[in-house]
Length: 440
Image (cartoon, rainbow, N blue to C red; front, side, top):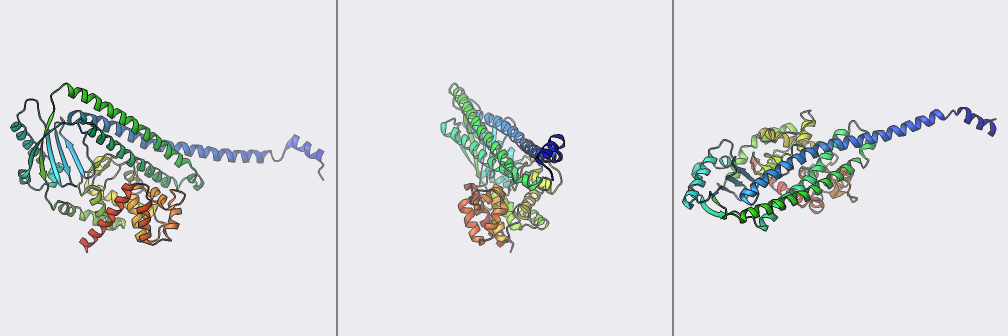
């Protein structure tokens, strides 16, 4: 029997548990190191996105400042409105597929007579029509359409109303990019899932990184708005010292049946990728209709590109990693190629349907969630169902699987975090039925 004295002496002289203590310490130290390394990796990975986004926004704002100086309104492309400027930025072409009209405009030179300005803008319209790859040429089948256009002279406007509209573009851009940050994190977690322990994935590391990036983006928004205000202040001062600037516009009504003819060009791509990725062709067509109105050169300020409005660093990179086996964003040049864009968009729908949302058992319920996730990410879909606001889709799937498809749709329409996504879900769901009927 060991006495207290002998035990004490043994501990002091040669503790048999010293080795165990050091091993336990090493395990905890290793776990802490792994956690820290994981955090650093997540932040570094997300910084790649941040650097890309910051560079894009700097170039975007610098270009827009030039446009504001010349044209007043800083008009740039949106998904359904393509805006192109000539190299010297003195000619502008706007193709609005929502209003079904196009406007070719030229800045009127000082001392130019109205009839000279009218002649110049009509010539500009013919020039744009003759340019290879121009959006106007792609939606106007015959130059004869130009003959029905009307000419209007307008003054360049640097008003507060114009400035407010320019600010709203930045605010809308920020709202959408907040969602893209969430999509980036989802792709990162999915990519790490096979190589990092589940308990690390479930820690708040990624959530913390997301919030940090969101705060930075919102701070950047305020700086961008202040810079925009300064731009308008400067151009107003300049304008006050000069005669009023005017623009001659040539307004053209586009053919009424244009969307049907544009859609027909891409049915083959949709059907081909539908078979390859097991995604309904009607869904692919409905998303093209809603995202770009079948304009392969569509661009939004996010930025997103092409027929299915692919963001290079989120959906583009996700498809590259999973399908093409390369970890890099896609380029705008790639995404302006129609078949590549449709392939990428359909592959991303497959990733959402077969991977991120696979725990949802009912096909129709999963379809509604896939449509919403295409716009806002799977995490925001989960938030609509999880009472605690969790972004975990497996947790949300348990709730979704207890509901009917109609209940799922109604819940999404009521509780999705962004109104834009609610409108998007309604539009695409309605248009799916249109293309199902068309193909029947």
